[in-house]
Length: 186
Image (cartoon, rainbow, N blue to C red; front, side):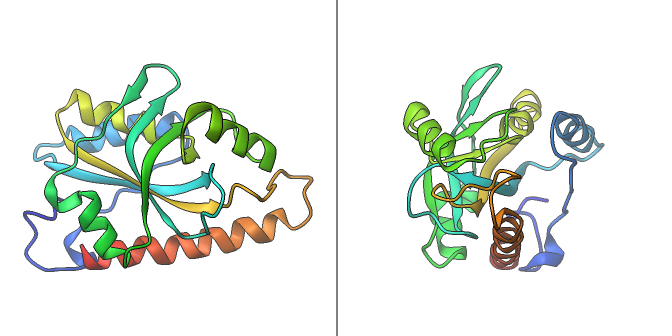
């Protein structure tokens, strides 16, 4: 539901759709957007890996551009209610804005994350933002992309890295807190 058309502030005023990760996410979102009364705008949220030094778990990463591995760059079309200043206010000023890289290959080692960030000029990486933007564009739905850092760029979270599971669990917990802070205040 659009924050412009809601009646009460907070979580109860949002329709929340959880989608499965990966390619099936695009199909699930498309079905939702093709309903009888589709939303006019949506906020695409989830976790991400930071590709720049200094980003911390739970920090908001607001995409001004999404690099699609199949179709090239995409520029989200947020309304004023989902703009970066609105998100910044909801997060208490801690969000960053920049280019988000969507990749099908997990980017988990510190070397790979920092190299990818430099090579693509991106500040974060995920596996489905570009996929979720596609039906929004095709169906003319306003959308913004907000991701929350699960793993900092300087930390190796590959399966063989010591402490990787603890880092990912803590990052997911902090991201969830940030997500609910945003949804509760927009």
